[in-house]
Amino acid sequence: MIDTSLLPLWVLAAVGLTAIYVYFKVSFSYWKKRGVPILNPTPPFGDIGAVIFTRKNASELINECYKEFDGKKFGGLYNFTMPILLVRDPEVIKDILVKDFEKFHSRGIAVNEKQDPFQGHLFALSGSKWRNLRVKLSPTFTSGKMKMMFGTMVECGKELQECLQDTANNRETIEIKDILARYSTDIIASCAFGIQCNCLKNPDAEFRKWGRKIFEPSFVAKLSRALMLVAPSL
Image 1 (cartoon, rainbow, N blue to C red):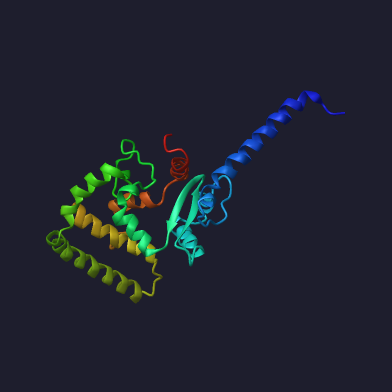
Image 2 (cartoon, rainbow, N blue to C red):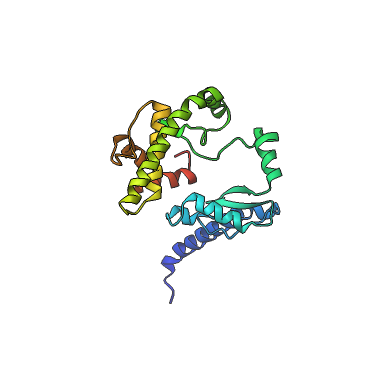
């Protein structure tokens, strides 16, 4: 005997599962309908599941996908259900960045400058906001300004050389990622803010501590970024 009282629940569950299946089936057919080669998107994450679960960073994933499309001018990926075009051909890239740039200026990145002003940088902004910021920053990178920065960068380079030499003399293991992060922090602090924070000599410098937080986000921050990819309006 079948308990007919549960029949509406079974029907509702079946309809729900069917709707979910159809939704992802339609969403993941975007590139196929346009004749663009794809990989193997998996619901609900598409091609970025490894990034969501922090098994890989975005750069590693893009590099792997780039190699998978070897011999092709471009390929299609999915950020959850959002289609993304990965371009390999230099001529197509040139058209996108120069000739047809007005059609491709959007970064596809959700930015909330009110909540986090640091999100409003050149690599995240789009359209008029990107153009306005670029106009403001361009004078900073003139040949004259770069020449003024060069001496500071040389000094930071000498400190890096001394730091590496001392570590080698003491036969200590060198953590390349950490030491180059400290080197980069010294250059940024000196050139952009006029601060000599000596991160190479003092790994626990205050400037370095705050910089580290940007690249070592908490679980909540990672979850927040994942949600921004799925539902930017939230």
